[in-house]
Image 1: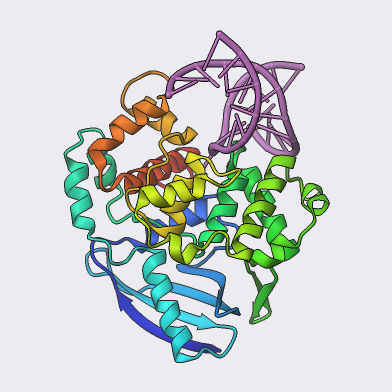
Image 2 (image 1 turned 90 degrees about the vertical axis):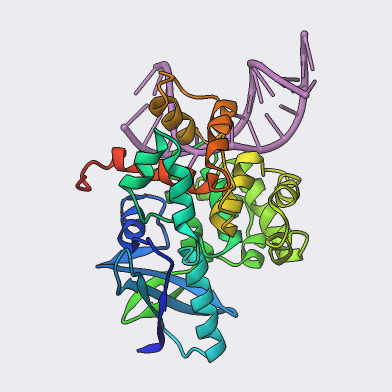
Length: 309
DNA sequence: ATCCAGGCTCCTG
DNA sequence: CAGGAGCATGGA
């Protein structure tokens, strides 16, 4: 039962299959599913759960996507919200050619961007989910982080069922805020992650942290708002601005993976320092976040040589 | 066992 | 203000 369906276009170049490939090879895809050549995940629109399904109809140079909402009756407003969400999710309106012009000026990064032409910023649908994911991911390997997220989702998120298949939903802030520290500890959250997670859930649930306001702020102001909260350092804030809000220039330069990749590709023979990464990144402005996305993709391809290169 | 993993806070000097 | 110790937990 499809309760809403439509087709939308994107700026080119856009390679939907690269997004699917990222999701398919990344252990971080806990809620997202790649089914055939479809992107699927459970989402809430006005609190009502749906299965969002996105698939590609066009080509890299003439991109078109099909958007389906399943698992419930959608109002026209919810359909419109789904389209809006998908446009943000895959950054469909990005003036991508501009990014490739800037990338091409860098002799090292240029070929990387060209090699993965059509790769685009992929968002986590909800800033709250992005924030909790970033906190979970602090200083632990992604595989274990995904395990923690999966446990959290199973415990507090609920799910939507379509055709007998259950699609998990990310927990709502108020539900998470009401969780007990003991329970999170039992899910293998460290004391720190437990405190941070409950803290941000509480802040969002009570309105202390208002994402609708935050998303309208200039990046540096948003960064200050976020880092004022205990447990949110610079890396976490930049990561959330990038993956949760879609700031294309947000740049988590302290990221371990970025430091590794930059150190390697720019011939340092060691881990680059955060400052060195930041200096490199200046050449990629105002697309530094896009550069980060590409480097992370490169890293992931190296870790998964099975995906045919 | 030892080191590492998509950091953060808090305490030194 | 910069630098580093300490923290927490599972995986390779």
